[in-house]
Length: 233
Image 1 (cartoon, one colour):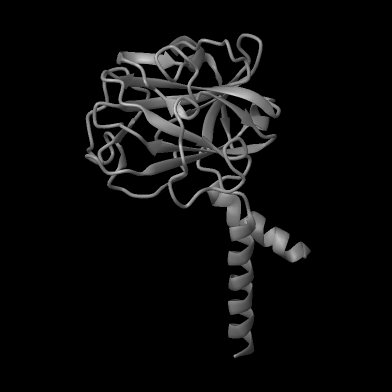
Image 2 (cartoon, helix red, strand yellow):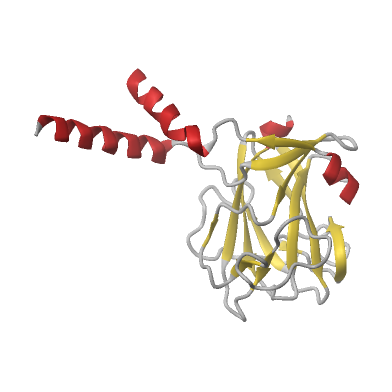
């Protein structure tokens, strides 16, 4: 009976400790030093959370839409048919050698009918991840309000203007959320990046040559690491 109680206590402590550790969806990403700054790149399908499986969906894996030719892996689209939703990403700019300040959000996208979305960034737009849709204002939060019939690295957000693309990021981990405005199955999100050089214009070649990175703690070793920390308490 004592052994069972001890085991239950250890499991409970482990779960509590796991919940306290930072969570990262973007386990594989790329970093670079182009232009006058640094960049962190990650593919759109590497999201951390979404509010519904009925809105933002994977193109190939969830059969929402066939990814356009020359996509890097899978894509994210909006299959909500008028429904609203959100998709969330966590990323750590320190892995690219980046520091807090103004950064530009850029996407490799297809969007032939300027079906835009909203961008929300923790710290810049609020101190707590929202449970309900925040109040968004055009042009402050709008992204991809552009006609993009073929794969393009789009660095502007509102017909050639910055829109919501320039945001103040924090040191270390950051959180971004894309909320539905107009996006539809016409939209394909392939790769996202943040650049500390606000004037940097990426290319496919830049992405391909960027340095591959992975998180220092992999899922297979997470429990072992947690147990080691638990024993040190």
